[in-house]
Image (tube, rainbow, N blue to C red; front, side, top):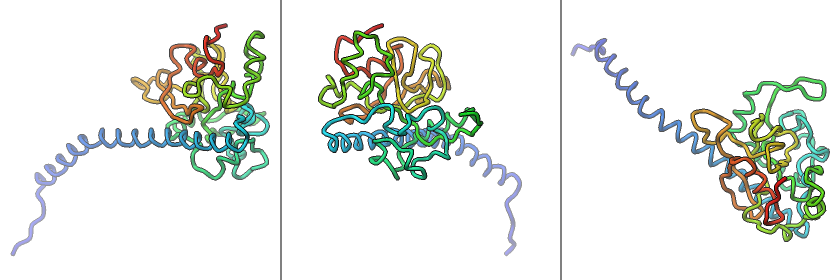
Length: 259
């Protein structure tokens, strides 16, 4: 019996069918990958929430100090993306909350890793190093911290004295840890992630929630962030309208200060 191969027409038909199937399937695959990354990001913060409950249980309800929860020196500058200062390899650099997080692969949202690496390199302490994100989450500066005296004098004493979970007026509406951008959005604030500490203010002066999730038309300044709250639930949050990050930061109850 004579054997024959595919004709050119038959091969072209098969290739065309494969191309059509790929065109149909690719958007679905892309959506599935996006959804999988979103699940990882939310689950990471869920694990942070569980770790926070363990910490609070061990320390009589007291929060870790918000400027040294991750790095004992405050994590200034490039700590968050400096691979040479990874805390698993350099535990002597670690802050008070780290023992509840170490050796867990929960410190980076995949989407944050991608957008942060787009920045390339950064100048840090007189040297230029690549941006290799190690830690992408930030703690609420107003939980056991005075936001480096960022608050006016009439609020300073009361907020500085909030050090325990029981002192937070509305634990379900005050975030504990959240995502933050690695770049500035001028209309929101003038400080990107630099010390793993989120110091929000009512206006546009300081830190704010990240804006890279579900950003419309690729505008990474207009999307959303994830945050875990003091009661340990995780939800999507927005830096908009201006001041919303501060509204969800303030543990002193209503009325929310405005300055």
